[in-house]
Length: 83
Image (cartoon, rainbow, N blue to C red):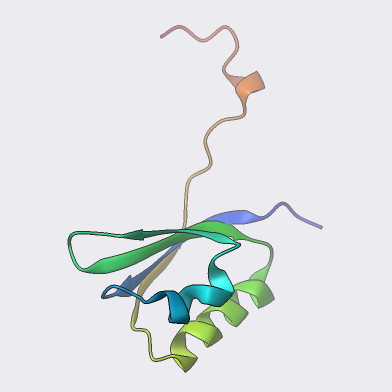
């Protein structure tokens, strides 16, 4: 089994708590000043991602983008690195 991947899902508008309720435990949710809602969280596999997108489309949320986020380097990889 592979490690989960952190994704950012952007939807148009300020999504209500009712729409996002099933996602609250798995995602950090930010309502941005530019009129979008950003969901950031770990997604375990493609079926998990498809389930999330199916939920969002079932409540008529307009998905603008879905993208994996770059992972920060593991702490052990930065030992000895100069700042």
